[in-house]
Amino acid sequence: MKISAIQRLGGGDSDGEGPGLGHNSCYSRLWLQLFCLLLSGCVHYDPKSISVTAAADTFDARTLNDERLRQFFETNHETAQWPRKTWDLNSLTLAAFYFHPELDVARAKWSGAKAARITAGERPNPSVSLTPTYDTTSTPPWIPGVSFDIPVETAGKRGHRLEQARHLSEAARRNLAATAWQVRSRVRGRVLDLYAAEETVTDLKQQEVAQTRLVELLAQQVEAGAASAFELTQARVSLYTTRLALEDAQRQRAEARAQLSDAIGVPASAIEAIAVSFEGLDQFPTELTTAEARRQAAVHRTDILAALAEYAASQAALQLEIAKQYPDLHIGPGYQLDQRDNKWTLGATLTLPVLNQNQGAIAEARARREETAARFVSLQAKTLGEIDKAVAGYRAARQQVSTAESLLADLEKRQAGTKAMFEAGEVDALALANAQVEFSTGALARMNSLIKAQQALAALEDAVQSPLSLSVPAPAWENNPRASIESTKK
Image (tube, rainbow, N blue to C red; front, side, top):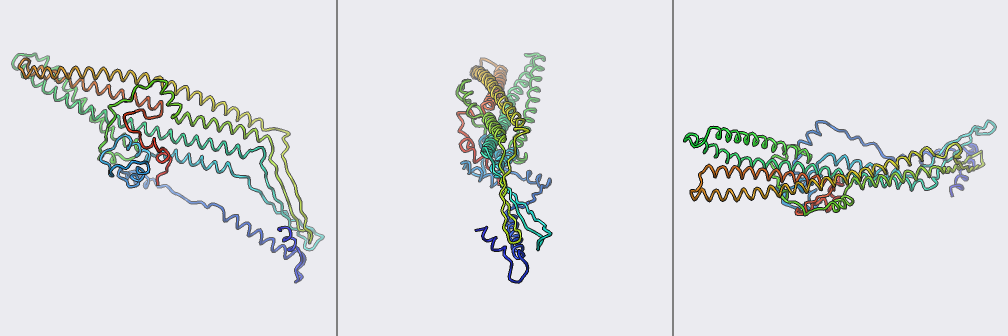
């Protein structure tokens, strides 16, 4: 149909303009219309400026009562009363998934990897060349001509490109999940720091009260000649030491709140007014064996799965370079209107693999595959070493907690017995005060061992990259990770 139409346009017109002139006018209009049609499908540049002042103001305006944050919570099946009265680890983690800029960077990288899949699937565009010829012996002297170049990929190159881009996109998605775990790990660490500071402040205040009472009683006995000044001095030094420790713990509490806000991605003012719940931080999962931890890591560690995806991408890249040994075919049809004669040509171009067969690129791709494989083996070995170390540390920390709890139980019994003896008049107030000081010291030691055990548990969770607190309900992002970490906030 197209050929016959061109042939009809090739005839001279009735006004005597000369053969081919009417055709040349229609020919030009046809290409002009085709050119405009191609331009209409182009993407236009959309500028997007960044203001330093506006970005800072936006960050300072962030709060945990944000309406869009509430919608984000509902998407992840967190439907508690809003604004929330208390914030636990799960809710603070979701808030970090919404606010933290590192996840925005990881999401942007994943978007770029997904866009690369579109690029990999694109077929090469044909090209067109205008080849006008000037003939001095003919009237008119110009002979219009056009030729096309239609590339045809061979050896499945497009399929290999798509496979490589698909695996790289999967690796970027896994890296997004790894970034989300890092964000969650930092939030957990800062919540634990705040919990440690809060409990330490409480225990030190109780110890300060007990030691103050002890100093008062010793001062009375020194005046009565029943105690030495040395004993009083020692008690006062212990009291002042406790007060210094209390002031340091209060400082750590203030810093922990600021660090928690940084881990979430909000200003410190957003954390100051909220109540943080530490539910579950005094509990531990059932005994976890090294084999179970290794199995958990094999299933859940996103960096290992990302490394596997990168290795698969390197395999596809090697296949692509091997396929490039086979040249692509270029089909080149052409057309000329020589006076009233329609002249058609058909050509084919094929690069001859004579001087090289893409051996260099193949060797590079094979070396990159070996490097990716070695990196995966190294990461796996490092992971297994981390798990062995974390399991051993967790077991030792749990044993320390058990010892501290037994000591505290004995001190509690001793305090109760001393109190009963004091009420019966068998011991004096000084003995009771000493028992109270010993109990408060034991309570502080138990708290320190508990925090160390929670830190060891956090290290084990980081090694496995999975929450292990079986007594605590699974966080919403574990049940629906795509809705939380892969969604871009609007």
